[in-house]
Amino acid sequence: MNWVRIKPLLSEQLIIEFENEAGYLFSAEFKEVIKIYNGASPESKKFRYKQGNSIVSRVFNNLLSFNKDDRTNIWRTNQIIHNVWGENGELDQYVVFANDPFGNKICFDKTNDHIVFIDHETLSIEHVADSFSEFIAGLKEIE
Image (cartoon, rainbow, N blue to C red; front, side, top):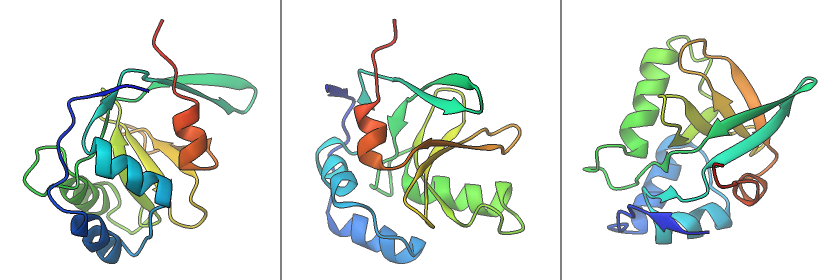
């Protein structure tokens, strides 16, 4: 898979620092992707998953950057999610790692490492994949 608009990771220590703050350890595969493609967008952007009896199609825009001064960074995004969207702690089990083009969030579920999609308007949470590997493997080019 090709990635574009890479923001070179300033230090691998930033990943560890964020893990400590979030209380969540990322998978080795996710860390390797971030070390190489921090903040980047994949050229293959569409992902699909089953929701009830339907197949849902979504678009993956970009990984969040671990560099604290980058505009779309994992630090600020997760702070906003937990302070604004999840005022009562109902979103504390999620760690946002990516955006779609419409303001929705793609997250890790800290309880089971699954990937979920959070709609920014309704705060509905949809299961996307059982792992980061499965999520990445399922990305397809937009037709």
